[in-house]
Amino acid sequence: MRRWAHRTHLAGWLLSLAFLGSCRPASDRPATATSALTVTDDAGRSVTLPAPARRIVSLAPSSTELLFAIGAGKRLVGRTTWCRYPPAVLAIPVVGDGLNPNIEAVAARRPDLVVLYRSQLNETAAEQLVRLGIPAVILRQDRLEDVARDARLLGVLAGHPAAGDSIAAALEAVAAAPTPAPVARLAFVVWDNPPMVIGAGSFLDQLAGLAGGANVFHDIATASAVVSLETVAARNPDMIVVLEEGDSAGLPAYSARREWQAIRAVRERRFVFLPGVLFGRPSPRAAEAVAEFRRRLLETK
Image (tube, rainbow, N blue to C red; front, side, top):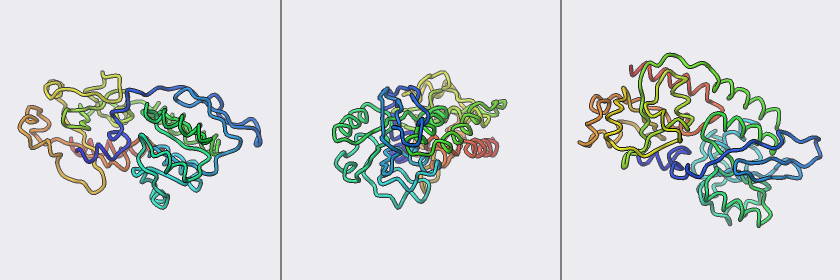
């Protein structure tokens, strides 16, 4: 459980979610092929490139996947340790972690654009990069609508606006799809000591609803929150959702601890396991994630 929480976009960076914000791009595409590209990022910063970026360092797994999806994968010259999808990304040099990045390692890749996940640490990093003459864009990536906006923004900055628009439209269609009647009440436990759960501010809450699951912590507006074991037990979910990373398998370690037996779903071993490679971050594969989530829900039910 702890291993997964450190190794995915969602749980590895949950402690930074209090610093998130959002805004819209000021421009969805350049006026002409030769004009400068100017957007407003999710920290409210104006970012201008003289031309589409040719050497990009991505410091967020979701952004890395988006850049490949819009056709700009060959322009990536640096990634984080946790950027592992699609497989082609593994050939790109690693420059460190996605939060509080190593500025020297990033600058050594000679990027003309650095893509950062929004957090207080990364806003400081962006300022440092700009002082070095390296443009940096900060993106919020909590819900499907965020990723749709990011697809358009990165499409502009990487010179693939049509592909960005196409991916954004597909994500918006998934997010706007009608939700089926719930088949089970769920709790996402992404950290065990103290218990941390997913709230309505997360894309996982969206995927659950679209798949026919009702998040028992949907009333929490943020992406995640720390709660007590007593609260989880009182909400009495039918199933506990666990995200798996890599080759990890089997019940989470906390399921064997005595205090967790107060939760009926734990006692009855009612867990839904979701692969981290598909569910560890919001991505263009949202429709696939919804279908897989529903299949696993119905199997467990």
